[in-house]
Length: 232
Ligand SMILES: [Zn+2]
Image (cartoon, rainbow, N blue to C red; front, side, top):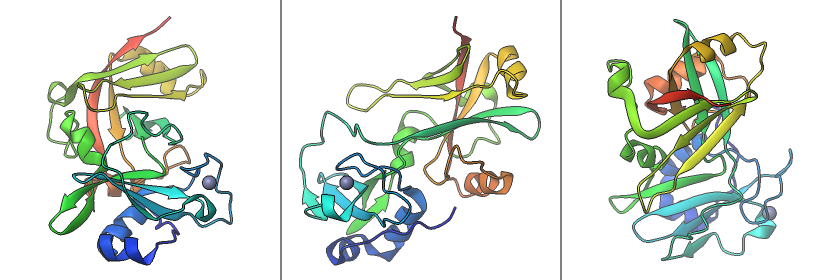
């Protein structure tokens, strides 16, 4: 969980504070600019832009040239969502022969919630409101089942859908599956799949076991169990 290099305007710095900024650096990943949709490239430092909706705020990464104002009051949350947002998903075999579908649902953006006079990062809380939990170890498989969370194994990919009630965004993610992978026979023989949602890991780029365990111990992954169907 490396801290990311991000440029911060003095106004944003004073309103968010160093603690929240440090948290954002651990939970934002510069892939595409959230203004123009183009990649940052290796040598570009992204700049933080905040949209303040009053009771929540959205932080996202932009090219400096694309961001006219680092803090914007935007009472209405856009119904179009965040079409340029990147997500990354992968499936891993854990010790004990357990399978985990791990997803970072919002690489370049984070949700902020009010915290006293300031703000704190609350992206995972959106998923916890849908029934996912950050302390899965003492819970049975049945207790981890989340209504609205479903997985489907297709010939070439594994897809996961999280249906949310009205007013909250639903999510669909997938990862490609290799028929020769040791994961495949296990996927084909199971009818449930553990799903982990995190913004603290660079999912899809070879996460090490200790990084996963550290994120779990720090309650940076929200888990839920999905029914796994086999799709034609
Ligand atoms: Zn841009």
